Structures are given as structure tokens and as C-alpha cells.
Image (cartoon, rainbow, N blue to C red; front, side, top):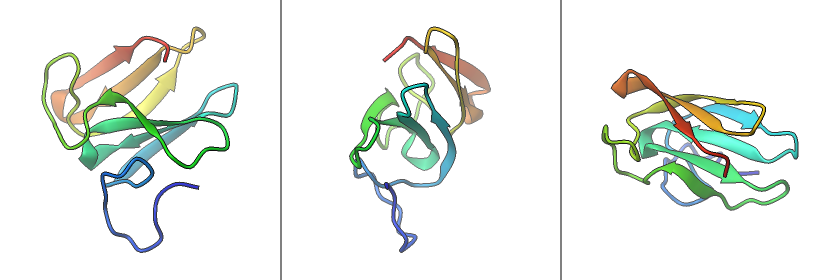
Length: 97
């Protein structure tokens, strides 16, 4: 399990600042929007440490590689990731990780 029960926000690979959405892929890997860290974290099935696969931890922005308060996720049939980038008013597509 990732996150904390103490309610303290963090930018560590397995902690969050306002996680808003989660998604499981067909292999039971977990994707989490970490809204106030401006990133999407990817957790391999059974692992507790995540990898940032979209955005950059603690850096918000509007160019193609940055996010500003990501809050929704979807995968297509090819496992490309779609992220609702709330403050940038857009949906970002990231090719399969």
C-alpha cells in the first residue's frame, strides 16, 4: 500500500499530496494522480514504491511534459494513458509506459 495514514503530504515516491484518482491496468499495476505534486505515479503490481510517469514532482506548468493538478485517468486498448490536466483545461495523452 502507498500513501500515509497521518495525512501528511509528501513528494516521496510512495506518498501523495491530494491523490485524486486511481486506475488499475489489466496486469493490476496501479496508476495514481498525485494532484498537488503535479504528477502521475505508477506502481508495479505488488510494489510499494512508485515511478513518476507523467509530470514532474513538485513542478507545475503547461508545456507538453508538465501537468497542473492532474485529477483523472483513463487507459485505451493500447494502454496509452490519458490524464485530465485540470488547471490547464486539457487532456494529455502519454504513450504506453
